[in-house]
Length: 287
Image (cartoon, rainbow, N blue to C red):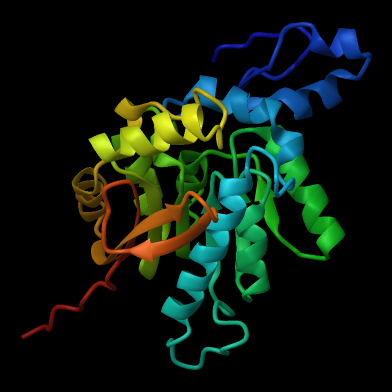
């Protein structure tokens, strides 16, 4: 593995900047935790380091992650409605009894919402500084969330399987998209679901998500997204189906630029969500 800093003892990570531990007079262990990025072929290093630099801003609702704060309210409402019809579901805690995984959990914005809806939540991220922020906030909120410094491949190799896998705003930030999606599909147990949220690769998304959001409105830091890394719904659906899942719902997401309010729409030209289900295996009768 690449390793950019002589102050760290680990070999499976890349550090934010060489020599930062010495400059800040912190221990190698503290430095390692604050600036480590776990590597495999799916991890896009430049994006991971960008999020590491902003890890202390995750819970600033008016900071660089404000779109996720607002998007997550919409997503949680959608998931609560979608799973409230399960047999025996408690309307006040519609995800109770579900073992949920939040891939690329960042500072825990979505993971905490899932926990409040009753789910048993595991959050994974390749940026350890994100996990430090997530654990700290969860402790302060009195929420028991299992945060782990792992890739999706690490967890799949461990044999873990979940009732609901959240793959939200991640696929546009990974390398080796096919391998990443295959790993995510392995993490869904038979009878379980995966929700994927990302940005379509269209002229409309270039105008809205890059030119508009990063340069005109300045809602996001420049360079947050690369249009070539956006994934069209047919590309994501193909990988879900290759992983044994069936598409159940397709929803677009739009934002009002004046109110900054997100809502569901039929149009998937820019942001969209897919909900897929992994069928339980059927038994072949013996004659």
